[in-house]
Image 1: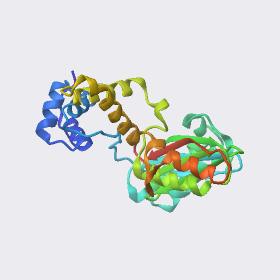
Image 2: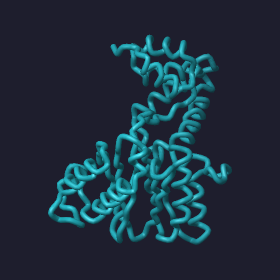
Image 3: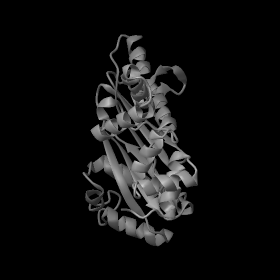
Length: 282
């Protein structure tokens, strides 16, 4: 049983918008399990659907680089936003992203063992140490992502708030839809989808949503419960899955239909195949 701490109460309050008293009751009933507490609040109709959004406050930037083969994203963290905005830090972050494109390392650990292209006598970890000495703060390479460019796909990246939030979208079927991919990347930044489609929803998450939906309509006539639950699941899909979300620039059409309709208008079969949303500190 986890202790119901002030920090847990704060997290539940921020994630649900429910009053502190109800949050405390829910956490106590759930024995400190915050996910169970959220599910119970939703079953009771007190809390709306909640996205899992990190509340960490690490400072940093997500650097982007690309070449003919790859596009890379790298999150670099520092202690203060003052250092993150420093030109030397920004140069270091971009250099690291370029090295990821150049060498395609499998992990951050493998990346830091590489020799620096600009000074082969130094490893990238040694360059990091020198940058730490220069700026006076601890600097960490937290994570990296390498996306291979496909010949018949459109890839676009959107960077927001000076690189604190970065999204990426890939559309398969043609290589000339970067503008559409960029629009959808901006949508991803604003709407925070958790999954591309229903196939990506974990079984336990789907079962939890079904359980919550049934609990919310348990007093309805048995003959209509299944239809109501189905409707609630569709509403969940429209919130959680990118292809079902109403497109932010035209809410009369879903993101998935937007992609298909755009392709059909030009006689091409387009498919939204991948998206990524990174926020510093997650």
